[in-house]
Length: 125
Length: 157
Image 1 (cartoon, rainbow over the protein chains, first blue to last red):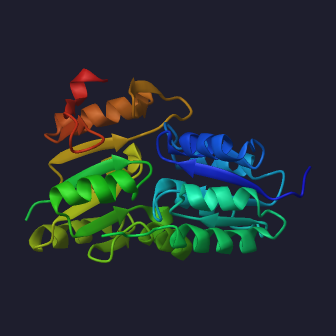
Image 2: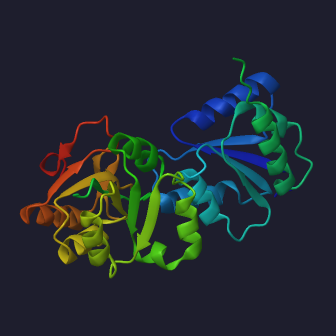
Image 3: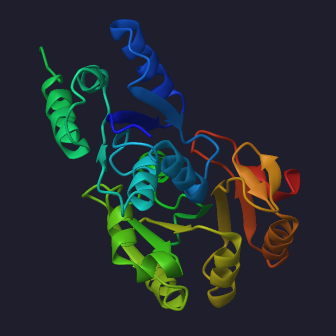
């Protein structure tokens, strides 16, 4: 059992896998993040998957849609967990920052990810 | 107005329903029929998270469904009705005569179920229940997203 903060990226289709692969290609880190998909999973099995992926250590779960099935499963599966935090609207900048800033609580890391991810969105018109 | 879509989907309100069907049908209300969700405030809040501010969402139990559906067809709203399982769907159809078509959008793997389509897994009992609905004049097709072709029940059970 490890207390080091981990990240789980859970999305539709193959988005999570691609994001985690991109993080590895940029940082070389292949331990901080785990990718998972909701493909083929109903609510109950998605909840089981989330419980399994978050069982060993404090975790931040990153999902894509703010009201999608991934978010619903994370909330339902981790309602009693105080060491699991959730961030929706996952993007690559927040994941890259997360990899290097994991010596904090899950809640603090989630707040930071939200700030970094939001600041990364720029419009140049 | 008739019901815009009556959808059987074990994820209930999620991306395909809100983004895919909601936009294609210009729906402005979702009616979720489910005893468990209707009874749990935190579950209702969870499903509300996925609904945009310009769309109304209501949660009713099976007992409340007939009145809610009757009111729905008289309204000028474009309504998507969602239920999570075959048993609930059958009970809704038995208690109300306003459902004429059913869209199977997603039933995933589960005990006793086998794959019928990429996104539809059914037990034999569930298949028989859906056939029974068709024998009562309710059209049952599978179609996960609006751009897909509707597949008649007879082609996958």
